[in-house]
Image (tube, rainbow, N blue to C red; front, side):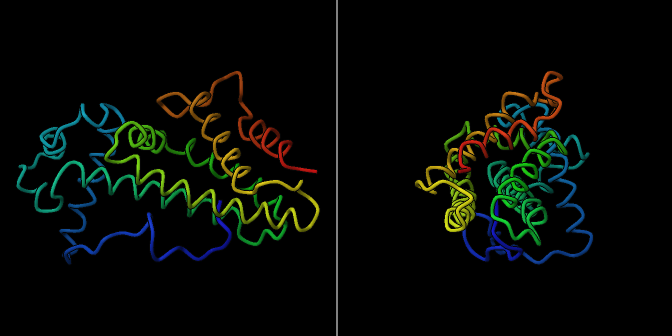
Length: 213
């Protein structure tokens, strides 16, 4: 959960420089990304081949390799995109909120709503967590969120609203709880379990009870 509206210009969410594309080229590249997003979500990372992506679009493999050097680099871009979109959604939810406890609550709700909004986002995160070539990058992204949340916790401690403790450990606890709730109560189609229709309320209540005075 972020502390402001400015995006980081370096770190795990930073995109590498790419070749300059024409408008048509940019559209084709976007089509490849969208097609792969659907296929990775439905078939899994190793269950999807470059050939599958090309067949989905009706193009040859040469088209794919003009825009991406490998399936791995394409999935890494998807992962970067999902993490950046998650961070943006958190920032928008926190914008204008002065109370640190309010920011923590808004971040929790925004995170859960984000994964509910598009089932494929959770699928990308799950895939990245399973494979070593992506898990380190995912871990870096999680550490950014932990650092942001720890900042809110420190402010809450200073104001007397949050009990004193190790803000980094507490931030890890909040992040872990959010993803556990999402992992358990969202199925592969991104739907919340029917016995927990108010998942965000449950998560907020659980997390805040652990940190409030």
